[in-house]
Amino acid sequence: MRRLSSTVAAALLALAGGFAVAATASAAHADSQICTQYGSTTIQGGRYIVQNNVWGDSTTQCINVTGSGFAVTSAVHNLPQNGAPAAYPSVYAGCHYANCSSGSGLPLAVSDGRFGSVSTSVSMSYPNNGSVYDASYDIWFDPTPRTDGQNTGAELMVWLNHTGSVQPAGRQVGSVNIGGTNWNVWYGNSGWNIVSYVRQSPTSSISFNVASFYRDMVNRGYAQNSWYLTSVQAGFEPWVNGTGLAVNNFSYSMSGSGPGSPTPTPTTGGPGGTACRVSYVKSEWTGGFTGNVTVTNTGGGTVNGWSLAFTFPGDQRITNAWSATVSQNGNAVTATNAGYNGTIAPGGTATFGFQGTWNSNDGNPSGFRLNGTACASG
Image 1 (spheres, rainbow, N blue to C red):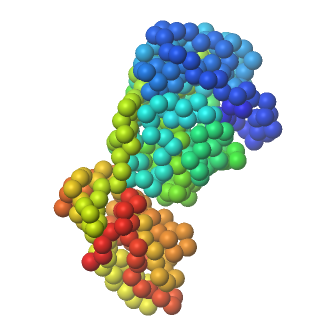
Image 2 (image 1 turned 90 degrees about the horizontal axis):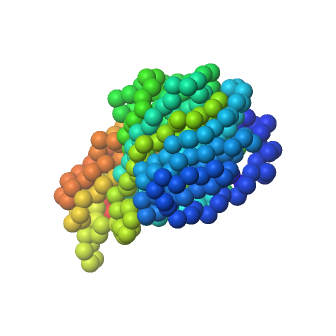
Image 3 (image 1 turned 30 degrees about the vertical axis):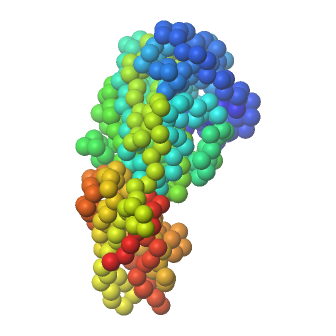
């Protein structure tokens, strides 16, 4: 079974069982050609996988794989533009139906402090031959750290460009400025949440932090901080033709990831010590409160991206927050850094706050843990 594209209509889901299992990645060869329906190969020593992935059409598509991407060399797709696309030729880091690249560090918990450092870039070329397509990222999240099968959490698509009358799954639900660029936001559901960010001014290249889009998804209620990032993919969804579409360069990085790099462990403050100290200052009134939190890095290393977990003792419910993305599940709360305060140098601090309601108990929270490491209070 192949992973479905975000634009598949609900009526097509019944066909999913007929999709083939992903082929095992073969050894990389510069400028090698793939014409098999689900053929794939590795590049850059296994760091990335390039896949043909013709899941939505019966015609042949061929791609030429280079050391840094691929180009579609032959395609004769001709599908209705109000339906599903023909394929998703793409390059990716992470795992796609048990076909995993090396050194990516994926799957990765969103609550892991390294998530804030996950970045990617791509440079593309578009043909001027009447092809109808979207040029997009496909970034996948799952409630569990799975490496096989269809993810059931959320699919994040970032559309750089599109032609014809094609559009993302679902409907437009708003717009947002991320990274200084304006995006139209679309939401749909095909058994998982599909959130598409369509660039208002098309481009052929982009570089961004994955967390900048994901936190907007969380704020809109389409994703959760308890989920896992499983893959970062970039490519094209063609409906008509597609010959000439090319990914010239693709990159993916995460602090502590890459070929031969060890997975970092949380920084500690030494034997018997802690890596952090948290102070909580509250302003309270009948039925409401605000809390201001200061996190101090007492460890010997820099914190690059942070997630602070803690527990309320009473019936507090957070209604809004600032300088962090905050989620709550019962009494358990998780706060993740904003784009501008994710780095905490040794001895440095990060602050955030929130407002909430309460009825019978507004006691101070406890059990603070920074990136999984217990913190002192005070």
